[in-house]
Length: 219
Image 1 (cartoon, rainbow, N blue to C red):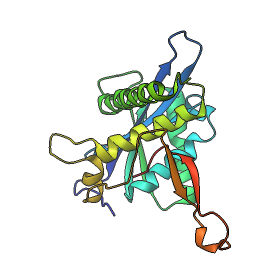
Image 2 (image 1 turned 30 degrees about the vertical axis):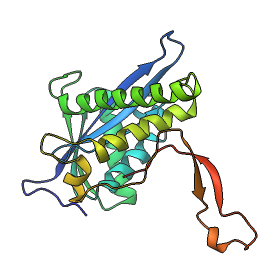
Image 3 (image 1 turned 120 degrees about the vertical axis):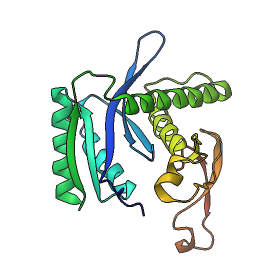
Image 4 (image 1 turned 135 degrees about the vertical axis):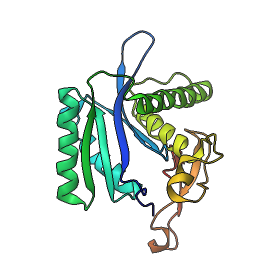
């Protein structure tokens, strides 16, 4: 598991991004986090900023737990909705984890202070766009309102963390965990055969594999 840096806890920055259809019929909001130093990225689609999406706070707490860092500094834009969101995350983390979280805010709407996570937002959008184009080429148009688009956003961030090699020759996952990420992956949306989790507990005559759609492999 990862440990805090010698100089103190890691900074985890959060911000929002937006993706929309060409005709403007659908606009999706992306919640993105980026960890300083390791450059780990995670993302998901949300229904709105702050408390609007009831799943956003538990998701972010789970991401902080997944990092394996005992202490973090959570940074967000200084606008009121973001301040409230960060306080909600800290309260939820205190309720259900042993994480130590301090909060800090960049000046509201100050892009220079939030540059690192804004770069992560652009990266997530770029990889999501690539996954969408590849799936569209194989299957036809993919709408942003479809549930599979939510999985594209999640999968894009997982790929950035696990597979994108930086100037130092390492991925974000290797900086965090000290070892390479070596999953078995196929193209997004590919049809695969998946072994049932409790296959060995079934009767001998029951099938143990099912046809499934590959969405992503979490790091």
